[in-house]
Image (cartoon, rainbow, N blue to C red):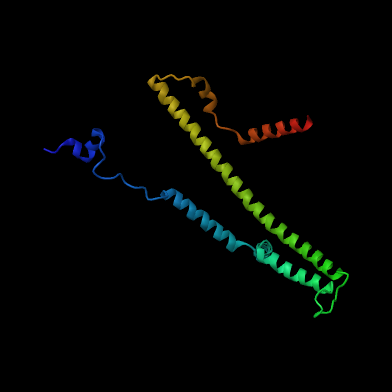
Length: 195
């Protein structure tokens, strides 16, 4: 007959290591992988559904927010200034008062700020959607936890188990009303502003 301490089931009781290792997790759970894929698919779909103007504004904003844009401006504006100060005698100055350079920079700033605002508005809309999703998930989790508390409380009552948190259970069993919470937050903020 085999020694029980040598079997996989008996190894834990004898204090020695099991004869085979426990199963390894495969990394991400199937639910997490599904959620990641769903989010990636959603982002790709939103990129495809973006209007031509949004895509152009995003590309311009990405380029103007890069170091290549900075280097290009250093080269162009630096060269313009050097030539028009007369420090490069091989090229004749064409804008010694820098009026044209100032006008170009001003017009460029107007357009760049517009493109940045367009991109920020689009990102704000995406952020609002994500905040709404976060709120809905939080409310769903709160509702499920409330139901679990009610179930566990009923089981405890049925078994006659008493705890020190029994007095709080009536409050915990109630779902949170998000509109009431927002009203309270707004009232508190308004009161703080008056002080």
